[in-house]
Image (cartoon, rainbow, N blue to C red):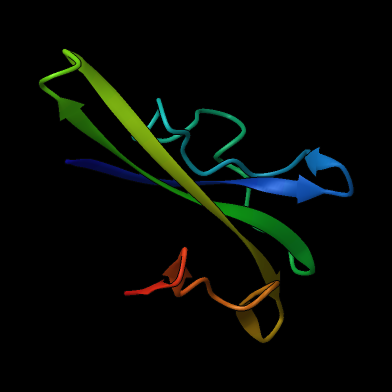
Length: 91
């Protein structure tokens, strides 16, 4: 498995302007857009993925998950609680 984590700002209708800390294909950082400080009272997508090779298919498969997080003066919190299960399977 090859895991990755990254974030981008969220707006009313999806992606928004602001600090972008990594991308699925840019794990070393995002020049310029990733150099700005995070601002209070902003919402970010916390994106997690892992890539696995399926030898029978002769290809890589990437599974992606996304959580929304709020950054404020008191720190970070998940917008809709932290996801703890997928299809009823507890972690």
